[in-house]
Image 1: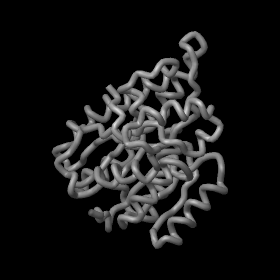
Image 2: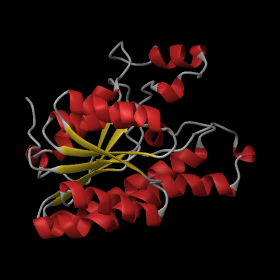
Image 3: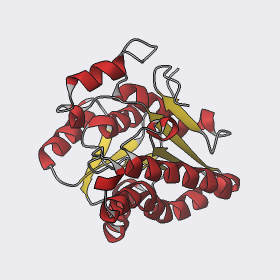
Length: 251
């Protein structure tokens, strides 16, 4: 079944490559007008824009730091000016995620995780929720991680922030339900993208061997889950976390 998102405007942060691009591609394929966002590398960002347009999708590209409140306001305004009010929000932007023992982390790095996974969705939601309320329809879909449920070691900063993101999403889902706005989270397992090119092969092989589905997940798998949560068919589903792990039970 293909869910139609015709007439909707989606903003996906951190969407020039990897999971973000897969999500943006899926929303565009379903008919949404999609705003792509990047910060550091224009070449893949423009390539992503051209890819979606070449496939028949409607897309725009905005450079902005999705962890900066001022730039978030400008980002949302740019999308609104060109496409109309954002009614599908997918906070996906992420910084590097090194795994370290607790003794090697510092408070600054912990704060960076909070900035990206809690405060960025917060500022984005503040910017788009008024328009969603006015329309009486909206979708906020946070990209979290099954790592929160699995409680991986040497990953405390990331896992803590992802846990906060899930808790924030659940609280907001209750707050916004009466306005026709749903808030859900998609929690992928380890899905190798460009950011994992230099990860040790033995780590990849060990994880692969634990996936019951017997294959790696893809950005498209995550995109399908986001597409469903964004659809009208999911209007009575809110405050939920959907783990996209190929059957790898994360608890």
